[in-house]
Amino acid sequence: VAAWGLAEYQGSPAASPALVAALGHDADASVREMAAWALSRADGNPAVTASLSSAVRHDANAKVRSTSAWALGTLGDPAALNALTAALGDASPDVVTHAAWAIGTLQPDHPPSGLTARLSDHDPQVRMLTAWALFRIRDAATVPALEAALQTEQNKNVQVDEIHAIAEIASASDNSLAIMRKFLDSPDERVKAVAVKAIAGSSASEPWPWPWPWPRPFP
Image (tube, rainbow, N blue to C red; front, side, top):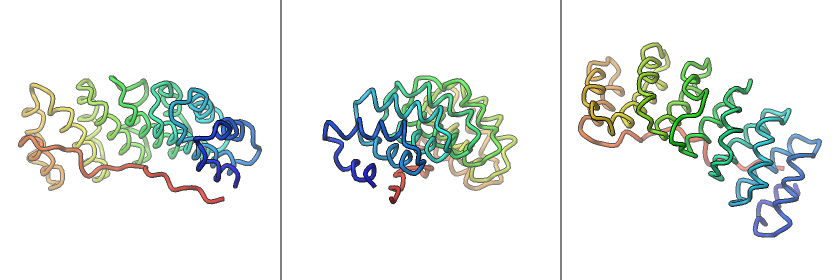
């Protein structure tokens, strides 16, 4: 309950250190998760980024790791990229999903190691958020991987998300028309619609999955 309440007092000098201590040392996983959630409001504090990054890597509880990954994405500190990249290898699909979302939110110049490989993850939500992250990063070098993933993807919703990403990245490419034309004959009307919009120069960014706002944990 104290961690829950401290979220309202992030302007206080004592709030962040107390939450960092709770995240790092409290024996109760629900308290650590609440502390991670509350720390998402502590902008511009390197100690907070370090604490959340440590929790993403090392906390024994998947909910704590997942909420910490979300908090890092919400804070938007580029210093969190290494920890989030490591979290792409987490055993929990929920952690990987939120790590991918956070990486997309940070928008690095190039996708970090391991991100593109998550396009073949067994969990469709992971694949969806990976496509979203690549959409946000907009690195033309990822188009072949997205196209390859699209050829084998069986989930219709993920297929549409991958085509969204390809369309958005291709919009800045000299051969965007050639890239998108191949999707005009798709039997899926949603895929075809995205291709038509992309060729016409419209944004491919909506609709899109967002694990945000994160529901406030209740003590």
